[in-house]
Length: 180
Image (cartoon, rainbow, N blue to C red):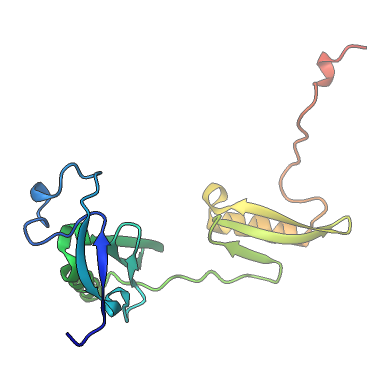
């Protein structure tokens, strides 16, 4: 053989056409079924950045944006087999392209400097200075809606002292219950 290859043990087993049918999968599913085979060195590389080898589950994953959300679908080696899992992932990606389900990640532009959208926490963040110290205030897009949270963050940025939401002083014993 002229190509570069290496030994690899697939912890969850190697599937085939028979195993790709759900009634014929390895049982019990949660138990490892180690299988050793030879794999070419460039097997884990993909020219498409949306198709990625996922080491933990030993599968090829296809990533795409649909309805402004990142979606992924795995193609495990334990179900499809070594080469076929990669082929199925590429075929699925082409199917997504042909059906028009592939979309770009939507970018949310910052309205002004000091106000931005944090994708991880799904908040609009206002960076402010209060009493000579930097502070940040986050407004949840889930709670207030995307535009509502943005409006709150912009208002807080413009008026950092008084704010935009009522301040609720909490803690301590209510005055009516205090003695003396």
